[in-house]
Length: 116
Image (spheres, rainbow, N blue to C red):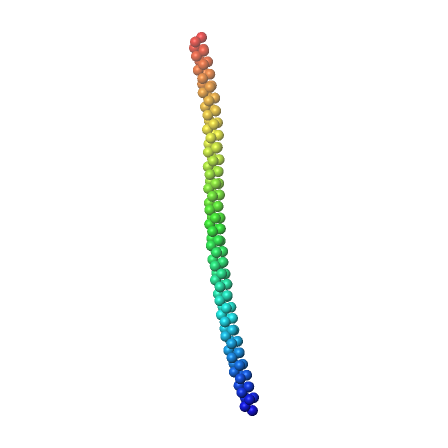
């Protein structure tokens, strides 16, 4: 039967057309998936770069803070040393005054005894 053969031929052609359309849609969908995957990989790489840069900045800040703490400790030592030197100088000054007053008293006593 020619009609049955024609119907079968049309069904086969339609099936081939649908299969080709399906394959084309599948290729388009795969291309979209690849594009999204590539974009996500780029975003991840950017985030990793930012994290690495941020980590480097934090490490620089920590280093600067350690340096400032070391400077502060050094300045405190210098200040403590200067204060100790000042206290020593004050004690020496008190002692020198006492000696000077004793010498003045001796001179006064000697002057008094000489005038008698």
